Length: 446
Ligand SMILES: *Cc1c(COP(=O)(O)O)cnc(C)c1O
Image (cartoon, rainbow, N blue to C red; front, side, top):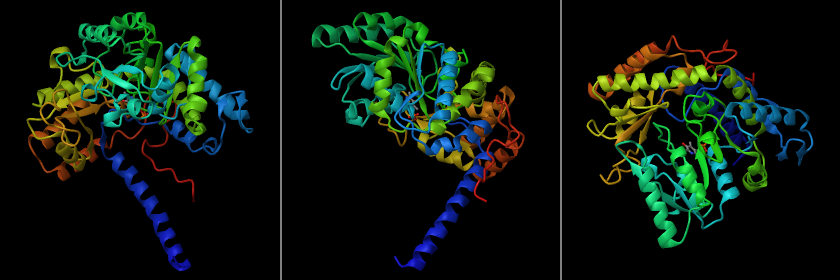
C-alpha cells in the first residue's frame, strides 16, 4: 500500500472506531438491557479498568512475582483476595482467572486428568459450553479431554434429578467400573438452587470431587440470597465476576486452604500468563461495593425477576415454572414457541431496543429446534436493577414485550417509547459514587 493510502485508511478507521463506540453507548443508554450474563459496572470499576495496571505483567502470587514493578499491584491483589474471602466466606481465593471459562479450565486442570469422566448439566438443560463434550466443541471435552456425562434432569422441576442421577452414577460404578472424577453443579440457565446438599456426600463417598460453577449466580451467593455451595458440600466454586456479581469481565475460584496449592498451579502457570491486572483492580473495587451494597442489591434483583416473570405471565406470555413461582434467581425463561422462535423474536426485540438472548430450553432438541432458532428467551434482571428499577418498572417492561411479541406492533415505534422510559434511569445504583451517568462515554484522548 502506498504511504498516502495507508494514512488515509488508518485515519478513516481510527475515527470510525470511536464513532461506533459512541453509537454503542448511546444505544445502550436508550435500551432495556436484559441479558442475564451481563451487568453494569460502576464508574469506579470503569476507572480502575483504564488504569495503568492494564499495561503491566505480574505472573505468580503476590509477593512471589515473576516480574518487577508490582509494588502496588501486589497490594491491590491482596485486598481483592481479602474482600472475596469475606464475600464468599472462603478460606482460599484465586482472583487471577481471566474469565469464567478460564476458571473452569483451571478447575479441570487441578482436579482431573485428561480422559477422566466428569458430570455436568447438558446444554439444553442449562449447562454451559465450558462443561461441554468434545463432539460439541465444549471446553471440558475439547481442551481438557474430559468425557462428559450428564446429570439426569427433571424438566418439570427445571432441576437436577437427584435419584436418577445417583442411579446413573451407580451404574457407571458397577457396569463401566469407572467413576467420574468431578461433578460440577451450576449452569447458564439456573432458576432454582441445585441439589448440592443432596448429592455432595454421595459423590464424595466415591472420590468424585464436587464443584459449583457460580458464573451466573456468584452475586446472589455473595448477596446471601441463593444457596451457599461451599457450605452445602462443594469443595471449590468457580465464577465470572461480571454477571450477577457487578465487577469487570473476569473470573475467580474460591475454595478451601487444603486445595490452595493445586488451584494456584492450575491457574498459573497452567491456564494464565498475564492475568489482566486492571481487571484485578476493578474486581477489588467491585467487591468493596458488593460488601456494602450486595445484599440489598441481590434481594432486589430476585424481587425484580419474580415481578417481571409474573407480569409477563399476566400479559399472556408463557413463562417457565409458574407452579414454582417462576424463579428464585435473576433469570426468567420464556417459552416463545407460540409466537415464533427465539432467534426471530430476539431480533425483533432488539429493534425495539430491548436486548435479550435466545435460549435453548428443555425439549428443543427433541423438537428439532437448535441454537439459531430455539424455543426460548432468557432474561436477567441484574442490569435493570443496577439502574434503579424496581417491581413497578418490571410491569412496564412486560408491557413492552407484549406490544412487540403479542400485539406485533412496529418495533421502531416501541424503541422510541423504550428510550423515553429509560430517561429516568441513567445512574448506577448500589455503588459508592454515581455522579457520572451509567453509559457515559469516557474520552481520555483529547
Ligand atoms: C458464562 C458462563 C461461564 C463462562 O464465563 P465467561 O466469564 O464468559 O468465560 C461459565 N459457566 C457458566 C455456567 C456460565 O454461564
